[in-house]
Length: 62
Image (cartoon, rainbow, N blue to C red; front, side, top):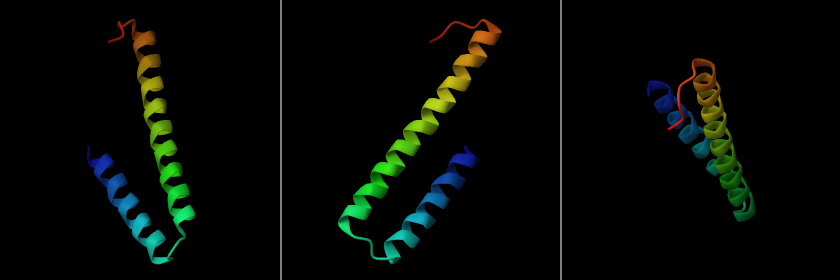
């Protein structure tokens, strides 16, 4: 959970730096979509690792 806090803190810092550059509405929308897809990618990656672990250990899926 500490790692998650660090990621959220880093995300906030990057967002502030980005907004200081005074991006256009299109750039803001693009960055929001990019962040959303990156978050979904990380979530899917974590789920895949968990599934592989369950298969290796012969645990039933939830």
